[in-house]
Length: 115
Image (cartoon, rainbow, N blue to C red; front, side):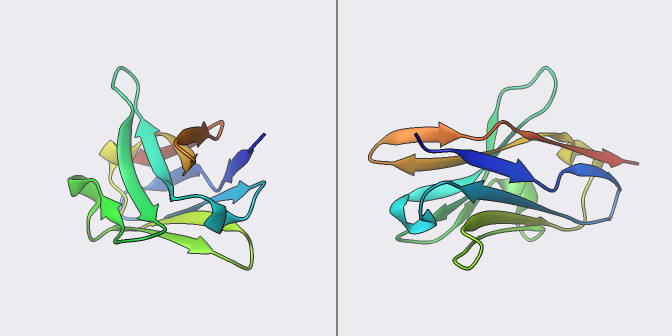
């Protein structure tokens, strides 16, 4: 069973930065897509960023130019570098990975941005 474990969430002031990491129980290049979703209270879960094994990364419009998704071979993680954070970025962030048409999810990590 694939396991994904997130870390790096927390409280930050607007304009600050956070780096989220997601450790996978299998080799990160065994997954096609890996990335991050988020869900704010009362809202649907939305895609934030996806790193494709083949092809370009994709970002939700509101985070373009501020967030960067990447895979790190040495640590076997998928990471989300978040810069210039805004209060509207506050949400629970979930790591996800797709392998053989099956989606796997982490437990989520809270990101709170104060104004």
